[in-house]
Image (cartoon, rainbow, N blue to C red):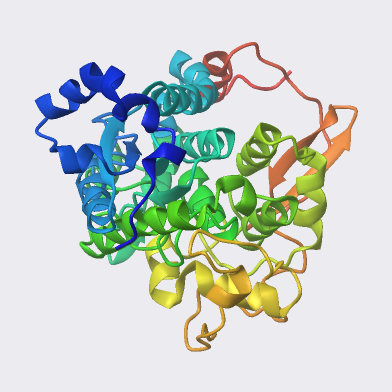
Length: 430
């Protein structure tokens, strides 16, 4: 086990020398020993809360991260930060809290790490804005860091078919239009979300989880395992060990998150027909380190990337299926074979993307992902647009859409609630 020189680490400000005796006394109050205090301090942040199933399994995984840190010679310091879950916040005033929460997550994580002089950071996040929020904090702080996703929810089963929360949202529309009964809607809502974990389709959480691997901030395969499975704890343990290796080698987030790494991230968003939110989050991560990578830069990559993963909501499968089929590394490997991925980017393994993918082989027997030369479509499942309606650019998910053009009069609303009310009451014609 490597011995670290704390005189060269940020935690020296809270643990070394006679004048730091008061600070050390606080650590002893939490049952740390003198040996514990002499080791590097590693922040272990999770966005655990009881707001939604996305976050409920994160505290369990954080304990495994801490064991990994301890086994590799560090002293973990656990803390939590907020989340706002879109699945509950949408459709009312609460949705205005969503995007802001990303920046609060980044800010609060930064303040905790800076205020307590932690030497490294492992972040565990479960949904929507919490994933990019922690990644933003990592590149901003630039202390050795590893990101780990909390995992997706398992799909529900109804009438012999997999269902997700999207089926419930669609069920609300069907109920409003008289296509299904209230009893049928109730059966949907009771079966759609059977476990802990983030929404199973390729929405923001699973999209940004794929991004975490493609960008190099997460260990290979760590994005795929569903939240309820004990195997998630194996990746959490490994993430704790990995951050100590990064600290030993002085590999920092800005060594990993480069312009090429961001391009890799945008590539996997397009290849999976991922969330349009990624076009907001990738520029925000880039902005933290002064890299120019705006909405239209993302859109250019979307346009040249083949759509390879047949994932909901535009496709047939959920995150669990992609994991069983071969996971993010298998998709990255075929994209690299096609020249769409930069293989020379550093990752949290301490190796390059190309080195990580060296022994990955494409499983031709599965149906979730295609090879780069046999895509679902030649263009990515997400596209960028500019025009008089969106002079600064707009992003649209086209995965699964049959109709790509529309001509008509637009009706504008000042609030989400007003638009929803008009649609619900069918009063949307001018």
